[in-house]
Length: 356
Ligand SMILES: *Cc1c(COP(=O)(O)O)cnc(C)c1O
Image: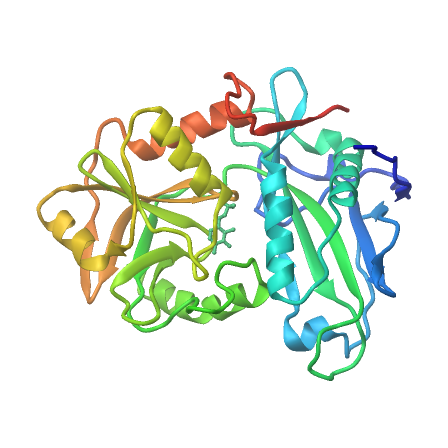
């Protein structure tokens, strides 16, 4: 295939903000790297990507994204290895998924060459914002918004694709207590649960706040029909360990197909750990907890990597998780991070190096 070099217009910052950031005390999503990328869709095509200093943008109040939530996003990470090279982790997965999400929201798909060329150009410009060392990474947030002006409820005829990045440290440093949903739902058959559609997240804030007021950090969503089956957390897929076996729900049009989830399944299988991918009944988890068979619950997602759950609540009953030796959550996190920081052979070809 012939590849053509695309012209990306680049306007660099006059002075980097990097010295204003305390990299040892990062609040997730509060500091952004010097540059951002945007690319406009107008007159039926994507135009030249622009890389400019990170900063505010102006939009008309009638801009469609504010009214109808026609917006999708992605979350991915870049890691710096001990030799100083930056690696993206499975970025083609995020590229494919943002287009899958876009398609569901009637947003035009973004071209692969534009995505990779502008993403790499952005990483190269902000290379110093990717800090080496365990837990450090550059979180990358691609997103698309509907930019047409006018409050008619119809798909926009113009869009803006953007990438912003922020330095991040380990995301959840404290263990997580979760509530199994009994009333509210995150997604339904035929809906948009499998898409990283902006509205999926806004809709979870209220029930999650209710859970927080009861002392729980997150909600584990159950199927909307019966609330009998555990599906996933708001931004993480979820795994259960019963005995020596891992269990996780199959992906569907209600469940997001997480990159961390599929990586954990692969790594577990590589290590000879049995993984059962099947609907996970609440009753099965509670019964296993009662007889001491439930060893672990953990969430998987790009931001958190692996988040260990220490207790769950369902129908007014709280179940603490036991202390176990050789936790799968630790094993999976270590294996994943060894690959992400390029400390072991990348057998599955998951790393995408970006040279400075
Ligand atoms: C992003 C997300 C995940 C995790 O996906 P990763 O690709 O592993 O980051 C899981 N569930 C939901 C609902 C999400 O939005």
